[in-house]
Length: 335
Picture (cartoon, rainbow, N blue to C red):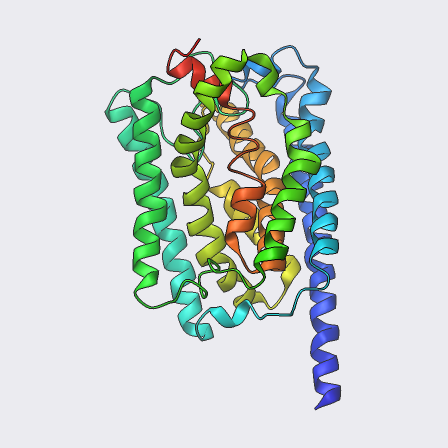
Protein backbone atom coordinates (compact mmCIF):
# COMPACT_ATOMS: atom_id res chain seq x y z
CA UNK A 1 0.00 0.00 0.00
CA UNK A 2 2.79 2.42 0.87
CA UNK A 3 4.52 1.79 -2.46
CA UNK A 4 1.25 2.39 -4.27
CA UNK A 5 0.68 5.68 -2.47
CA UNK A 6 4.24 6.80 -3.21
CA UNK A 7 3.78 5.92 -6.87
CA UNK A 8 0.59 7.95 -6.99
CA UNK A 9 2.34 10.89 -5.35
CA UNK A 10 5.26 10.59 -7.75
CA UNK A 11 2.93 10.36 -10.73
CA UNK A 12 1.03 13.43 -9.57
CA UNK A 13 4.27 15.37 -9.16
CA UNK A 14 5.31 14.49 -12.71
CA UNK A 15 1.86 15.44 -13.98
CA UNK A 16 2.17 18.81 -12.21
CA UNK A 17 5.54 19.37 -13.88
CA UNK A 18 4.10 18.49 -17.29
CA UNK A 19 1.21 20.91 -16.68
CA UNK A 20 3.62 23.70 -15.71
CA UNK A 21 5.82 23.00 -18.76
CA UNK A 22 2.76 23.05 -21.03
CA UNK A 23 1.69 26.31 -19.43
CA UNK A 24 5.08 27.92 -20.09
CA UNK A 25 5.04 26.79 -23.72
CA UNK A 26 1.46 27.96 -24.17
CA UNK A 27 2.29 31.35 -22.67
CA UNK A 28 5.25 31.79 -25.01
CA UNK A 29 3.16 30.80 -28.03
CA UNK A 30 0.39 33.25 -27.12
CA UNK A 31 2.87 36.09 -26.80
CA UNK A 32 4.55 35.17 -30.09
CA UNK A 33 1.12 35.18 -31.72
CA UNK A 34 0.48 38.69 -30.37
CA UNK A 35 3.81 39.91 -31.74
CA UNK A 36 3.17 38.32 -35.13
CA UNK A 37 -0.38 39.63 -35.49
CA UNK A 38 0.09 43.10 -34.00
CA UNK A 39 3.06 44.15 -36.14
CA UNK A 40 3.94 46.94 -33.74
CA UNK A 41 0.41 48.21 -32.99
CA UNK A 42 -2.27 47.02 -30.56
CA UNK A 43 -5.57 48.40 -31.94
CA UNK A 44 -7.42 48.31 -28.63
CA UNK A 45 -9.50 51.06 -26.99
CA UNK A 46 -7.31 51.58 -23.90
CA UNK A 47 -6.79 55.33 -23.33
CA UNK A 48 -4.68 54.88 -20.21
CA UNK A 49 -2.12 52.96 -22.29
CA UNK A 50 -2.34 55.02 -25.48
CA UNK A 51 1.05 56.65 -25.01
CA UNK A 52 2.82 53.52 -23.81
CA UNK A 53 5.47 51.97 -26.11
CA UNK A 54 4.30 48.85 -27.94
CA UNK A 55 7.00 46.69 -26.37
CA UNK A 56 5.89 47.66 -22.87
CA UNK A 57 2.21 47.03 -23.68
CA UNK A 58 3.09 43.52 -24.85
CA UNK A 59 5.40 42.91 -21.89
CA UNK A 60 2.97 44.07 -19.20
CA UNK A 61 0.98 40.81 -18.93
CA UNK A 62 4.24 38.86 -18.51
CA UNK A 63 5.46 41.35 -15.90
CA UNK A 64 2.10 40.91 -14.21
CA UNK A 65 2.49 37.13 -14.34
CA UNK A 66 5.85 37.44 -12.58
CA UNK A 67 4.13 39.45 -9.84
CA UNK A 68 1.36 36.85 -9.62
CA UNK A 69 3.87 34.01 -9.32
CA UNK A 70 5.57 35.95 -6.52
CA UNK A 71 2.20 36.35 -4.81
CA UNK A 72 1.64 32.61 -5.14
CA UNK A 73 4.91 32.08 -3.31
CA UNK A 74 3.77 34.49 -0.61
CA UNK A 75 0.43 32.70 -0.23
CA UNK A 76 2.18 29.32 -0.09
CA UNK A 77 4.41 30.61 2.72
CA UNK A 78 1.46 32.09 4.63
CA UNK A 79 -0.52 28.84 4.35
CA UNK A 80 2.32 26.33 4.81
CA UNK A 81 1.19 25.36 8.34
CA UNK A 82 -2.53 25.05 7.70
CA UNK A 83 -4.28 21.80 8.50
CA UNK A 84 -4.56 19.74 5.32
CA UNK A 85 -7.94 19.49 3.63
CA UNK A 86 -9.19 17.65 0.54
CA UNK A 87 -10.84 20.10 -1.86
CA UNK A 88 -11.35 17.41 -4.50
CA UNK A 89 -13.57 15.52 -2.04
CA UNK A 90 -16.01 18.43 -2.19
CA UNK A 91 -16.89 17.38 -5.74
CA UNK A 92 -19.11 14.33 -6.44
CA UNK A 93 -18.02 11.05 -8.01
CA UNK A 94 -16.12 11.36 -11.27
CA UNK A 95 -18.92 10.74 -13.77
CA UNK A 96 -21.18 13.28 -12.06
CA UNK A 97 -18.29 15.74 -11.84
CA UNK A 98 -17.77 15.49 -15.61
CA UNK A 99 -21.48 16.13 -16.24
CA UNK A 100 -21.62 19.10 -13.89
CA UNK A 101 -18.39 20.64 -15.21
CA UNK A 102 -19.31 20.40 -18.88
CA UNK A 103 -22.87 21.57 -18.24
CA UNK A 104 -21.71 24.58 -16.22
CA UNK A 105 -19.11 25.58 -18.82
CA UNK A 106 -21.79 25.36 -21.53
CA UNK A 107 -24.14 27.45 -19.38
CA UNK A 108 -21.40 30.02 -18.79
CA UNK A 109 -20.78 30.38 -22.52
CA UNK A 110 -24.52 30.75 -23.16
CA UNK A 111 -24.59 33.38 -20.43
CA UNK A 112 -21.81 35.28 -22.17
CA UNK A 113 -23.59 35.07 -25.52
CA UNK A 114 -26.70 36.39 -23.79
CA UNK A 115 -24.70 39.38 -22.58
CA UNK A 116 -23.46 40.01 -26.11
CA UNK A 117 -27.11 40.12 -27.24
CA UNK A 118 -28.79 41.91 -24.32
CA UNK A 119 -26.33 44.81 -24.16
CA UNK A 120 -26.55 45.89 -27.84
CA UNK A 121 -30.31 45.19 -27.91
CA UNK A 122 -30.72 47.89 -25.27
CA UNK A 123 -28.33 50.31 -26.92
CA UNK A 124 -25.25 49.40 -24.86
CA UNK A 125 -22.05 47.48 -25.56
CA UNK A 126 -21.82 43.70 -25.26
CA UNK A 127 -21.46 42.66 -21.61
CA UNK A 128 -18.40 40.82 -20.31
CA UNK A 129 -17.04 40.10 -16.83
CA UNK A 130 -15.62 43.66 -16.77
CA UNK A 131 -17.51 46.89 -17.24
CA UNK A 132 -16.31 48.74 -20.35
CA UNK A 133 -13.44 51.02 -19.33
CA UNK A 134 -12.48 49.01 -16.26
CA UNK A 135 -8.74 49.09 -15.56
CA UNK A 136 -7.76 50.74 -18.87
CA UNK A 137 -10.38 53.40 -19.59
CA UNK A 138 -12.36 53.73 -22.81
CA UNK A 139 -13.06 56.46 -25.35
CA UNK A 140 -16.81 56.43 -24.56
CA UNK A 141 -17.46 55.75 -20.87
CA UNK A 142 -20.52 53.69 -19.91
CA UNK A 143 -23.72 55.42 -18.94
CA UNK A 144 -25.18 54.83 -15.47
CA UNK A 145 -27.85 52.64 -17.07
CA UNK A 146 -25.25 50.50 -18.82
CA UNK A 147 -23.24 50.09 -15.63
CA UNK A 148 -26.25 49.09 -13.54
CA UNK A 149 -27.64 46.69 -16.15
CA UNK A 150 -24.21 45.11 -16.64
CA UNK A 151 -23.88 44.45 -12.89
CA UNK A 152 -27.44 43.13 -12.61
CA UNK A 153 -27.10 40.79 -15.59
CA UNK A 154 -23.80 39.30 -14.42
CA UNK A 155 -24.95 38.92 -10.83
CA UNK A 156 -28.12 37.05 -11.74
CA UNK A 157 -26.74 34.93 -14.59
CA UNK A 158 -23.31 34.01 -13.23
CA UNK A 159 -23.77 34.15 -9.46
CA UNK A 160 -27.39 33.77 -8.33
CA UNK A 161 -28.58 31.06 -10.74
CA UNK A 162 -25.47 28.79 -10.49
CA UNK A 163 -25.34 29.17 -6.70
CA UNK A 164 -29.01 28.36 -6.18
CA UNK A 165 -28.81 25.40 -8.56
CA UNK A 166 -25.80 23.80 -6.88
CA UNK A 167 -26.88 24.77 -3.38
CA UNK A 168 -29.83 22.39 -3.76
CA UNK A 169 -27.36 19.50 -3.56
CA UNK A 170 -24.17 20.83 -1.96
CA UNK A 171 -23.40 22.62 1.29
CA UNK A 172 -21.55 25.93 1.30
CA UNK A 173 -18.42 24.11 2.50
CA UNK A 174 -18.57 21.92 -0.61
CA UNK A 175 -18.70 25.12 -2.65
CA UNK A 176 -15.53 26.59 -1.07
CA UNK A 177 -17.58 29.25 0.73
CA UNK A 178 -16.79 28.30 4.35
CA UNK A 179 -13.45 28.98 6.00
CA UNK A 180 -11.52 26.12 7.57
CA UNK A 181 -9.07 28.56 9.21
CA UNK A 182 -10.55 32.03 9.54
CA UNK A 183 -7.49 33.59 11.13
CA UNK A 184 -5.16 32.36 8.39
CA UNK A 185 -7.63 33.36 5.67
CA UNK A 186 -7.73 36.94 6.96
CA UNK A 187 -3.95 36.97 7.22
CA UNK A 188 -3.69 36.03 3.54
CA UNK A 189 -6.32 38.61 2.55
CA UNK A 190 -4.69 41.48 4.45
CA UNK A 191 -1.10 40.66 3.50
CA UNK A 192 -1.85 40.22 -0.21
CA UNK A 193 -3.98 43.37 -0.30
CA UNK A 194 -1.57 45.60 1.58
CA UNK A 195 1.78 44.20 0.47
CA UNK A 196 1.25 44.51 -3.28
CA UNK A 197 -2.17 45.55 -4.47
CA UNK A 198 -2.79 48.81 -2.65
CA UNK A 199 0.77 50.01 -3.22
CA UNK A 200 0.68 49.19 -6.93
CA UNK A 201 -2.63 50.81 -7.89
CA UNK A 202 -2.41 54.62 -8.27
CA UNK A 203 -6.00 55.37 -9.34
CA UNK A 204 -6.85 56.94 -5.99
CA UNK A 205 -4.19 59.61 -6.52
CA UNK A 206 -5.88 60.83 -9.73
CA UNK A 207 -8.89 62.16 -7.82
CA UNK A 208 -9.70 64.70 -5.16
CA UNK A 209 -10.29 63.11 -1.75
CA UNK A 210 -13.96 64.11 -1.86
CA UNK A 211 -14.53 62.60 -5.30
CA UNK A 212 -12.79 59.37 -4.30
CA UNK A 213 -14.81 59.06 -1.09
CA UNK A 214 -18.01 59.50 -3.10
CA UNK A 215 -17.03 57.17 -5.96
CA UNK A 216 -15.34 54.39 -3.97
CA UNK A 217 -18.48 52.95 -2.31
CA UNK A 218 -20.30 52.94 -5.66
CA UNK A 219 -17.33 51.23 -7.32
CA UNK A 220 -17.19 48.63 -4.57
CA UNK A 221 -20.88 47.73 -4.77
CA UNK A 222 -21.07 47.85 -8.58
CA UNK A 223 -18.04 45.65 -9.18
CA UNK A 224 -18.76 43.40 -6.22
CA UNK A 225 -22.07 42.38 -7.78
CA UNK A 226 -20.97 42.75 -11.41
CA UNK A 227 -17.71 40.80 -11.41
CA UNK A 228 -16.42 39.74 -7.95
CA UNK A 229 -19.35 37.52 -6.95
CA UNK A 230 -19.93 36.11 -10.48
CA UNK A 231 -16.24 35.19 -10.73
CA UNK A 232 -16.12 33.71 -7.25
CA UNK A 233 -19.28 31.61 -7.53
CA UNK A 234 -18.96 30.35 -11.09
CA UNK A 235 -15.25 29.54 -11.21
CA UNK A 236 -13.78 29.30 -7.74
CA UNK A 237 -16.72 27.98 -5.73
CA UNK A 238 -18.13 25.50 -8.23
CA UNK A 239 -15.71 24.70 -11.05
CA UNK A 240 -12.39 24.63 -9.17
CA UNK A 241 -13.11 21.62 -6.89
CA UNK A 242 -14.33 19.78 -9.98
CA UNK A 243 -11.17 20.60 -11.92
CA UNK A 244 -9.12 19.20 -9.05
CA UNK A 245 -11.31 16.09 -8.85
CA UNK A 246 -10.96 15.41 -12.58
CA UNK A 247 -7.24 16.13 -12.93
CA UNK A 248 -5.81 15.19 -9.53
CA UNK A 249 -3.25 17.92 -10.24
CA UNK A 250 -3.12 21.18 -8.25
CA UNK A 251 -0.94 22.75 -10.95
CA UNK A 252 -3.31 21.88 -13.78
CA UNK A 253 -6.24 23.00 -11.64
CA UNK A 254 -4.60 26.41 -11.19
CA UNK A 255 -3.97 26.69 -14.94
CA UNK A 256 -7.51 25.60 -15.83
CA UNK A 257 -8.90 28.14 -13.37
CA UNK A 258 -6.80 30.85 -15.04
CA UNK A 259 -7.94 29.84 -18.52
CA UNK A 260 -11.58 29.77 -17.42
CA UNK A 261 -11.23 33.24 -15.92
CA UNK A 262 -9.87 34.48 -19.26
CA UNK A 263 -12.61 32.64 -21.15
CA UNK A 264 -15.23 34.65 -19.26
CA UNK A 265 -13.75 37.90 -20.65
CA UNK A 266 -13.91 37.08 -24.35
CA UNK A 267 -15.55 40.37 -25.34
CA UNK A 268 -14.01 43.19 -23.33
CA UNK A 269 -14.77 46.90 -23.58
CA UNK A 270 -11.35 47.49 -25.13
CA UNK A 271 -11.71 44.70 -27.72
CA UNK A 272 -12.05 45.57 -31.39
CA UNK A 273 -13.75 43.44 -34.03
CA UNK A 274 -13.48 45.63 -37.12
CA UNK A 275 -11.67 42.90 -39.06
CA UNK A 276 -11.04 39.15 -38.58
CA UNK A 277 -7.42 40.08 -37.80
CA UNK A 278 -8.48 42.45 -35.00
CA UNK A 279 -10.95 39.87 -33.66
CA UNK A 280 -8.27 37.17 -33.45
CA UNK A 281 -5.79 39.56 -31.84
CA UNK A 282 -8.39 40.69 -29.29
CA UNK A 283 -9.27 37.12 -28.28
CA UNK A 284 -5.63 36.08 -27.97
CA UNK A 285 -4.83 39.15 -25.90
CA UNK A 286 -7.71 38.36 -23.55
CA UNK A 287 -5.97 35.09 -22.66
CA UNK A 288 -2.59 36.81 -22.33
CA UNK A 289 -4.11 39.51 -20.13
CA UNK A 290 -6.34 37.51 -17.81
CA UNK A 291 -4.91 34.01 -17.43
CA UNK A 292 -2.29 35.15 -14.89
CA UNK A 293 -4.73 36.89 -12.52
CA UNK A 294 -7.09 33.93 -12.85
CA UNK A 295 -4.27 31.55 -11.94
CA UNK A 296 -3.48 33.50 -8.79
CA UNK A 297 -7.14 33.43 -7.75
CA UNK A 298 -7.09 29.65 -8.35
CA UNK A 299 -3.90 29.18 -6.34
CA UNK A 300 -5.24 31.16 -3.38
CA UNK A 301 -8.41 29.06 -3.42
CA UNK A 302 -6.56 25.74 -3.73
CA UNK A 303 -4.31 26.68 -0.80
CA UNK A 304 -7.10 27.93 1.50
CA UNK A 305 -10.17 26.07 0.27
CA UNK A 306 -12.02 29.37 0.61
CA UNK A 307 -13.12 31.27 -2.51
CA UNK A 308 -13.71 34.41 -0.43
CA UNK A 309 -9.97 34.81 0.08
CA UNK A 310 -9.19 35.78 -3.50
CA UNK A 311 -12.43 37.79 -3.78
CA UNK A 312 -11.55 40.02 -0.84
CA UNK A 313 -7.76 39.97 -1.16
CA UNK A 314 -7.26 40.26 -4.91
CA UNK A 315 -10.42 41.52 -6.56
CA UNK A 316 -12.96 43.60 -4.63
CA UNK A 317 -10.77 46.48 -3.38
CA UNK A 318 -7.75 46.34 -5.65
CA UNK A 319 -8.18 46.72 -8.50
CA UNK A 320 -11.86 47.54 -8.74
CA UNK A 321 -12.02 50.32 -6.16
CA UNK A 322 -8.47 51.62 -6.23
CA UNK A 323 -8.14 51.62 -10.03
CA UNK A 324 -11.74 51.98 -11.17
CA UNK A 325 -12.95 54.74 -8.85
CA UNK A 326 -12.02 57.40 -11.50
CA UNK A 327 -14.11 55.52 -14.10
CA UNK A 328 -17.09 55.35 -11.72
CA UNK A 329 -16.74 59.07 -10.95
CA UNK A 330 -16.94 59.73 -14.68
CA UNK A 331 -19.91 57.38 -15.17
CA UNK A 332 -21.95 58.94 -12.38
CA UNK A 333 -20.67 62.53 -12.88
CA UNK A 334 -18.98 62.76 -9.48
CA UNK A 335 -16.65 65.77 -9.19
